[in-house]
Length: 255
Image (cartoon, rainbow, N blue to C red; front, side, top):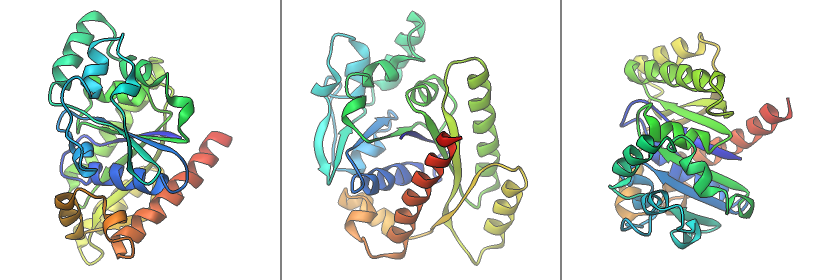
């Protein structure tokens, strides 16, 4: 499974979802976490800060650089990490001018794909070219929303973006599902937004990630919450999400 975790709105828990999903999958098989966001959030979630040369940006800027030189081994149990750098956006612009951006991440990961059971790619919160490059390197997409109606609209926009590029043959990735993060079970807004999305007939994950202050403390500790507080309710939700994502993946790709 190569999954891109996407949203078109920041602050919805996308990077936390990617980090914790990677950490759980690392307990199921060898996993590569790829930070394709110039904000470097996924790297920081595992305590890694990279320079340009030893990051995805450095690999993409020079096709003679072997991606293995930038991968950090064993940042968590079963998890390796390819970090980002703030120069990634500029590298993307240069690649776009050369016509090579859409396939750039897919090309970069090609030498190591066979080494991993799972690849989890964190993306920038938009539908820009680097997000498309991440989706083109994946075979599935998971998107995140919260009780904010704007994030639900973002889900619909992302799905439209994915479907358009499938038609254009820029990607073959399939939508794996839509997951609610920062879930407040007592909040009317959360229930209304989830109900509205359910009416779109998009594949909704039954697992909902509850709001928890542990996410912020885990970020400060530079460890995903499933590793820092594995018995907490939010960690349990991430474990359930990983299991549901794997089961859904098998169903989607068996069809």
